[in-house]
Each structure stands twice: as structure tokens, then as C-alpha cells.
Amino acid sequence: LRGLSECIFCKIVRGEADAYIVYRGHGVTAFLDKFPVSKGHLLVVPDEHYESIHDTPLAKACRVWAVASAIAKYYRVKLGAPGVNLLTNSGSYAGQVIFHFHVHVIPRWGPMRGFFAGRHSLTEEEAREVMGMLEGVGSFVEEELAREGCT
Ligand SMILES: [Zn+2]
Image 1 (tube, protein in one colour):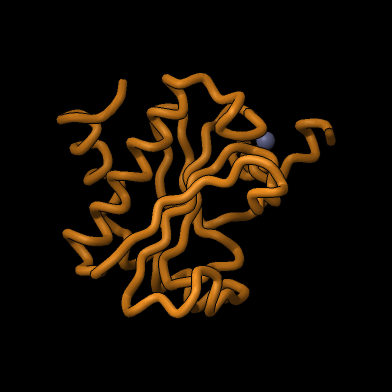
Image 2: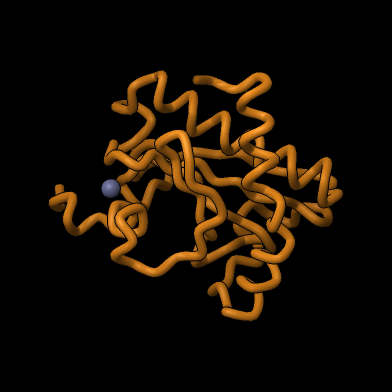
């Protein structure tokens, strides 16, 4: 295992690595995936370092899932995405690449051709467009969690 100082997600949480931050709160950070499979593909992570879902305390995992669920709802209800995937990978055999627990939120704007079909490098232009789409997501997440989220 590499030290936490080397973990890219820890660096993003600490503000030491660049990312488009979508939401911060409740000990959770959400930011755009650098290699999205769809427009708006983002990751939700706990601010503390846990390798995967298998060693994340349940209360913390619950908050991560609550934020991910609220963002998924934002995509469907507010932005009209006809589908959204929520996904976490535990272990390299399951496709985990970054060993800091994270939940993928992947809005689907049309029929899925294959899970990773369309994967590409995030451009600044696309990131700006998505950040614009997500302008109201922070307050939406806060409202959702206040009403029925894990605390
Ligand atoms: Zn980390």
C-alpha cells in the first residue's frame, strides 16, 4: 500500500490536487471523474482515507451513499436524465483502480451501449458545462439529507 500522502483522492480532499469539486459537506466530497463514461460522471468519497467499502465504517459509507443518492436524484428529477448508475468497486478483481473508497454516480442520457462505452478524458469545456448543470446541487443535497439522509 502506498502512503496516504500519495493517495490522489486524499490530495483532492485536501486541496492539493486539482479537481472539479461538485459538493463538500458531511465529511464527504464529490468531484468530477477525470475519465467520465458519460457527461456528469462523478465520484463521491469520504474525506478520510478508507481503502474500500469493506473497511469503511458503516455510518461513513451511509453518508457517502446518501450524498451519491441525492446527486443521482438531482440528475433524474432536476436534469431529466432517464437513467443513473450508482456503483462502487471493492478490490482490483472488481475493477477498483484508486484504493480510496468511492461511489460512482453515472447519469445516462441515452441507452447504455456498454458500461464503459464512451470513456474519455474530461476536457475543461465539458467540465465547465457539467459544473453549470450542477449549480444547484449543493443546496439540493443539503435538503435531501436534512429530510431523510443518514446523519
Ligand atoms: Zn485516500
